[in-house]
Image (cartoon, rainbow, N blue to C red; front, side, top):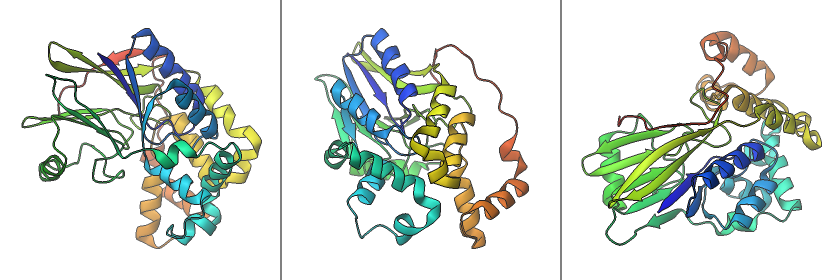
Length: 297
């Protein structure tokens, strides 16, 4: 059995197509899209249609839930997401999905998918953790938290995404994996990244695939339907994250919150000036696809 687990597509259709072609070459039997199909890049509706046509299983990601909430006028959302000009790119993506009638798969996506073939270790797949789609499996997750998650949601293998960085970690008898991101990797390797999981001799063998694709074509899509102009600074940050394979929004948002600064062009320029180390030149990544199995952390 071979399973492709891909996540964090974020509306990047060229990256998704590259991953699907790569997975087809490896003759996968099952595809799971582990959340965050949409938002950031402007082709969310096309991404939803593509994975739906494929018959892939879905889990719900935080960005999926955000655009669903915006489209449905969910009053529980913080007012900033609904009214602040800085977050207009999110609202643009919600309108795009609404107009394309592409929201229903996001409304019905579960939080987890369990894989439990007879005689094989059990696998639980969730966008973040099974407790919350924002609780990602990352390098700073403590052993105590891993223990809590496993006690609440027992499985031999826990697979998540959300942090946009592939990871393999063992804690006692539990194995944690992070798929990495298809559309917006944050590990300074801009190739589309996903997890290929193979069951052989009663064991799951992970391969972390990195697929080359036309990044320039993905960046050009930001000009679609005036998304880049309408989305303002947030859309530009999303574009630059795709271009550089780095996280810009979250560090900037945290910095602005700590200083009590409003999100906008002025504070963004100050953030850039105070943190030049975050904007060092990008080292070109390889132009071919490859596999890697990182050592357990």
